Length: 123
View 1: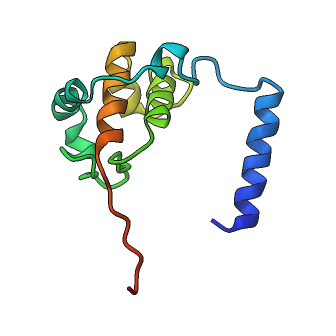
View 2: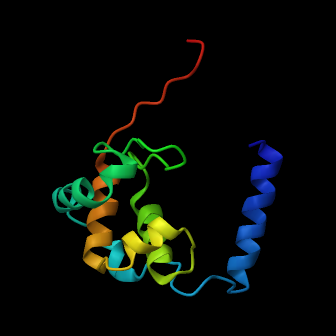
View 3: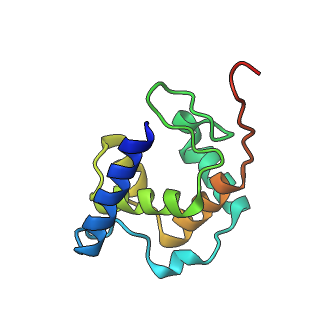
């Protein structure tokens, strides 16, 4: 994404947020500000999430995003949006609908705890 495009998108997002235009339930409640339990999240992810997102957070299914190293607040926000239906993707809506707030925090802590080493091409 070019710098100009990124700037435009950030301005649009800031404008929408200042107007209070946000999908209900799309933002993580304050309770998620506290860190979750990464070990509990690892156990949960291994059973429910690994089929698409891999045991280590590196996707094994085409089209599924890598979650390793993702920011915990982002993971919490997206799972909350899938759970509430504010964000639509059939498989994720089904997977997230029964998650508790604590489980969402645990999953977010697990994926955020995985360290990813970026590699610059051509070096």
